[in-house]
Amino acid sequence: MKFCRGSSLGVGRLAGGFRAEPEYGSKRRDKYSFLLDLREMPKTPQNIERQDGLRILFAKDVTTMEYPWPSAQTEEPKGDGILQLDEGRCASLIFFGAGNWGSRAIAAILGWKFLPGKTPLWIPLPLARVNLTIGNITGVDGSPIDASHHFVSEIDVVKAYTQCEIAHNCDDVVAEMRLKARDVKYLQVVLATMSQETSLNVIAQQIDKL
Image (cartoon, rainbow, N blue to C red):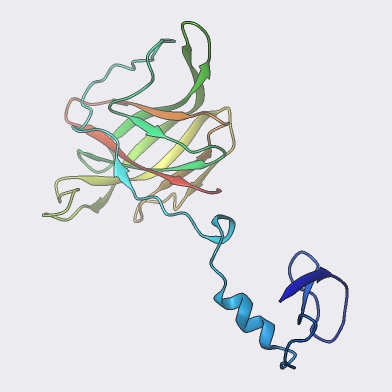
């Protein structure tokens, strides 16, 4: 079977403006039989949906009330709070922590850009800063997030230097933050609590779009 560009000859137009025609000398076939051939073709990377799992960014909950901000560095970013991003992708963030309902905390999201050279440099750029309020939905004992932890139910954007969206921002649901990462290779989340009785953590995931 060969493909040629065309407009409308019975079978109609395929995606991209191509139609299927039988090779000369081939047996006569039903005019829709080429659809079966296309259905059996192997999928290409362009039409396979990429799947990326959720993961918790901090090995231990953050309990500090300080607001650490990283400096430029020569070493590639790694460790707690870091999410590696494929080119052009966005990020989804779901915050949770231990503390009383209504406890508040702060999160800053930044991206790392790379400057090549004899001594390469990684530069942190601010993407957003948000206030967080812990809600009443808890985790489940035996799961990665146990029942002593509550999900954040309200995310208030204080500053945003990139496009972001807040989903499900009310007390009885789990809030989610989605943001574009401005073509950075690494995303970093910096957390700080506003009470000694509160701890905080975050679940992160790569996504294709907001």
